[in-house]
Length: 88
Image (cartoon, rainbow, N blue to C red; front, side):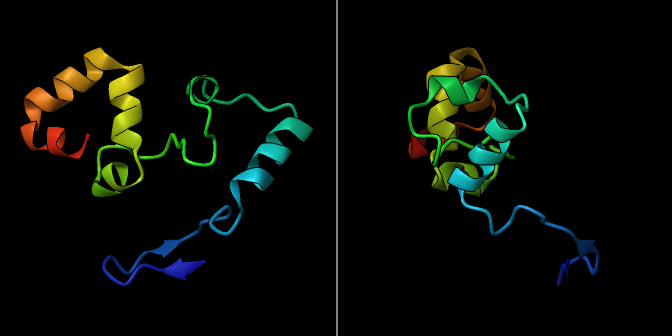
């Protein structure tokens, strides 16, 4: 738990310090469902289904995943925010 300095709200990030290997081990151990895009991307360490449109999305390659796996959505996004095309 930590307090967000900007909003003053308390935040809980229970997986914040887990490595991707630990998360996938937990998913497998408990036979949990997961988003199918993880099966499309060979590097599960980098694949994330968190918020993709922000600057972190560009920095961590999430926009590339969007462009590659969901081209129609990527086209819509770039029409709306043309500057995004500079990152992919």
